[in-house]
Image (cartoon, rainbow, N blue to C red; front, side, top):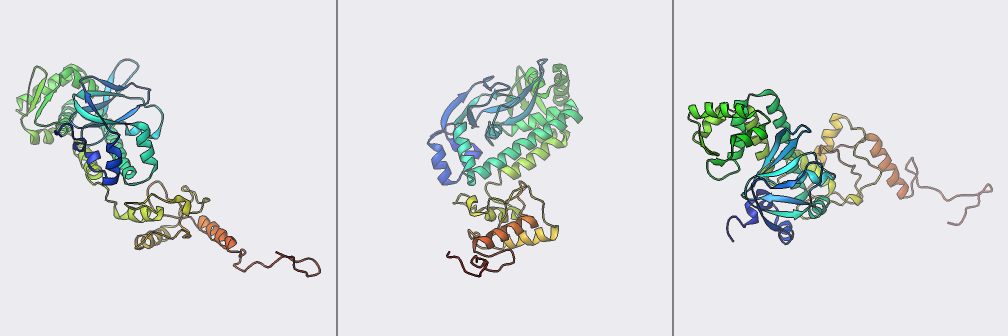
Length: 347
């Protein structure tokens, strides 16, 4: 198998556990992506999720007046279409701006895997957070930084996704991605060439001094790279504060969460406990060497993965368990019903 035809050249697929990889690999479809190919039109949902290996795919937002701006770029470090897991159409366009190879999988298959709540779903959440981080930082960069800084940031982000130091792209395409005038891109590129940081001619840009670009770039590149490396390169290792949350859900590397073990009336958005009680609860769950028993009174988790229970929820859970064992509100065993004369009714 050649390097370009190896699915695990994509970092997301390479990070899948063996069991998940075996299941996914049977349904992967190899695709060749060409320059300018539109994978999704604005306002429509994607039918497949793409895993680039050598291609570069960008998400472009198009305005009613015909102007455009790049909101995210994806190479072999992640996947394209993860936003579609939330359902519905997305307001941006997905375009191939770096031709190459990749693989794709039907969206329904990814959604089924996401609902399994296994290791693959946690990996999907990491990449979704990395995608969200890139979009957020793009908004800040386009609003507050100069064209020179944006161009340096853009060149560095693309260098991270190509082999070598040469980019095949025109100033016109760069201006469309940055959402600025073409003349502004040309002026900034001329400054970088005079500083001997890049060399460009006939749609080819060669980076001569990467460290020089990093110094002239804004802080957005370093922030996005640091956060994405933490989320994506971190694999499936759970942080210390999330370990107790996974145990509370009944999640480990092999088993799916058994939510039916817990009481149905515990809601994730119930009022939180006090800070001290929350810390004690988190420490108690983290210290458990095994998964909780099915009858453990563990509440649902908040979306931020913190393990917190409301006092009202704990009281309801204790009352429900007491009634289940035939005890009343005060913990006493219920007596058999009697008539006015004191005769006990047959059970």
